[in-house]
Length: 126
Image (cartoon, rainbow, N blue to C red; front, side, top):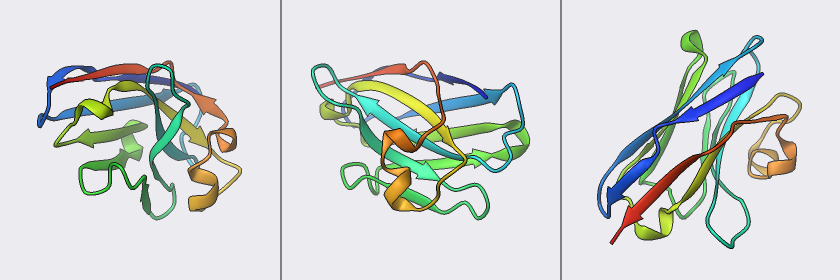
């Protein structure tokens, strides 16, 4: 599976962006999808995930009620709608796919994921 993330950019605090992650190369079927981010000088951290079968969503506390993850399996694409953006949301955002594991414990940990996209930069100015 190849993942291509897009949609990043520069936005003012309080604004919105929608990230997209398109999968190609093999069937998207069965893969849960996640978004992670990495700010300069910090470790990569979990943002959100969505299961394959029933679309259950998971969020980091820092983005809950502001970000929404969704997927369109027909288009092999997962989205991250980001609202009420804050300067601390500034980071490179990565999408990832996991097949072997399920549940919040695994979805929130980057080693669980099998495939990663290249990242898209989100910069939130104050």
